[in-house]
Length: 223
Ligand SMILES: [Zn+2]
Image (cartoon, rainbow, N blue to C red; front, side, top):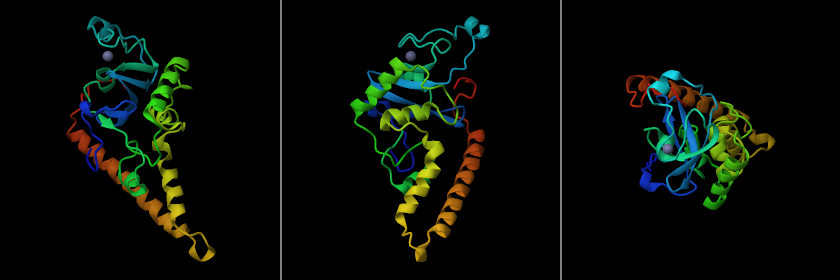
């Protein structure tokens, strides 16, 4: 795993790993929990409608390996790694990273939070698979595939992307004294401004690069 990339090979997968891949030309990532034996439990948006053209083309078939059907199966699903990746590259979400690293890296790739033991992570994923097929309903920002994987790994129900900003503030606050002669407010403001500016700059750069070098199958209209 490189300093600035969480890319891994399949041979490096470990049970309980929170993994992800980029979909739709890197515009968003899809997350899941690797539970061993070539299986991933993940939460997918329940939006697919029957498309007669896909049926004619034979694209509505269930996976021969895991039985997953992209039209019929929704909410929390268990699929083979191939069905999870859909030919995209594999990445591993990093936990317990330093605050600086968490701020430098793209959000949705790492967290300062501590992961639970692999058995606990897998147990949570299996429990959700059995008991709550919809995980409270998919919401693109508040309750998505990343929230699900993060919850399974830490027991904390939230989205890192949505909370990265809050984490940064809390960690910076701990770093500085808060006496009246050491008001941290100006430091916060400049740090937060820098953080946001950097996020916006990176997003714009990535969008431009991805437009030019779209190495994903942009024709794939699924999540
Ligand atoms: Zn499959």
